[in-house]
Length: 378
Image (cartoon, rainbow, N blue to C red; front, side):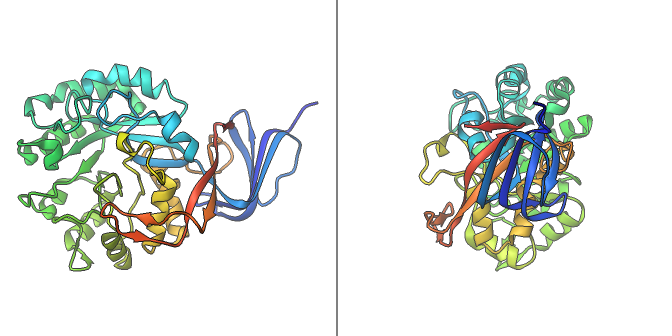
């Protein structure tokens, strides 16, 4: 018997910012691609799954995480730690530098079911050293020619350049020199930056840092509570508004130190929403209870005052656009890759906790099923 579809997934709510879907519906899949989506799908199928009490989204897109070999500083196996929890596409924040690019390409990008793109480290060895080692401390490790060569070799697998000017990453190096080297790499390759700003010591005002960035560059860690942040006295600083007007983008990058409820709530109340919501998920999150993931991070933004209509696109459509993958992922449009996330709201979930252990109750979205290129992730 010839079937119209390989798979139909239906849910009580299907949401896609790209196609405007928001209500009961289904997605039909054939040969790993979406062939139909909407409130009603007609035709025969080899396999079907119905989730009447769940939310169906495009596979989630995480703009800042650490998929990498397990013996690297932050590395986690994306197929084990991330893919089963609804995220199908990840941007690595600087795990590999130019010296380890071929290994990273073969082991992580080509070796994972998860779709991985790289923001290559401006430091030649990236984050392959021991925990606590500042990878940008030695300015001689910021080798522009080598980075340019790796990016040219990597093509679309390398989205841009990762640079972190915090003291933890830059050590005793002048962060202005670190950023200038990364900008040189970015301009020579016409790539954006994924930029971790300088928080403390308070020796370089955030306004001056933002002024150096270019349209399309992404500031991560945007809702931290340390001095020199985007919120002062309960309001978003003028420099952040001006940077946004120039086309600078802002990402959450939750991690272990970078998400604060009070900061997020103040920024959202002021009308300053992040462009993307990301986890900065790395080795220290493995085995966390409750497990740190993108759905839980999304739920923290909802608890901070974002609407679902604003938050859902920031883990699907918007990061896909920024990564140049918007015709492939982050959408349920026919022709796109059949990456799907099925999630259920849990009113009884453990409280949502920020990096200062401040908590918010009220429930959380949790993963029920991931579909990657039409395959059910078991």
